[in-house]
Image (tube, rainbow, N blue to C red; front, side, top):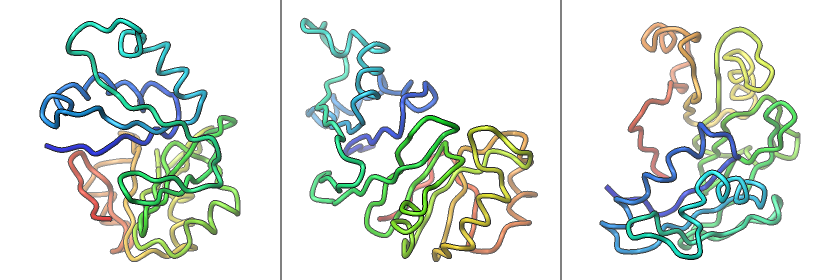
Length: 191
């Protein structure tokens, strides 16, 4: 019903394709939607959604307020909330996760530098990708994600970016520690 802003982790289509769905939020909230991304991600958005960024826009296109993340080591402000970028690798592609207060969010990653792990340490809630059981070139497996979570030991954790190859929701959750759950569409995590 309400969306305050959008943090882009990287430019892959499965993480950007919903940009056009900002329209109803513009209409309901009567304001531009702030988006935050690294320069290369913004350039990709401009190519894929040229009509949104055109000089002469037709009525009804998504209205955006674009904010560039220039330094992945410096927190930035989103509506009074300090957001710390978290650097990760998605195979060889540098991507971002984010730390917002007690929440650390990393998706589409298979490598976290020690500095990122330290920035995540102490988070109350961690959302981390776990694509499947078998190794993958650009995503954590379930066992890799669980090892990271065991090391960081948040109060609760959600696994996201899961595939059908992971198994059925109920069966997978039965094998997880009680403080780790699978994320699902519509999940709301309080920050």
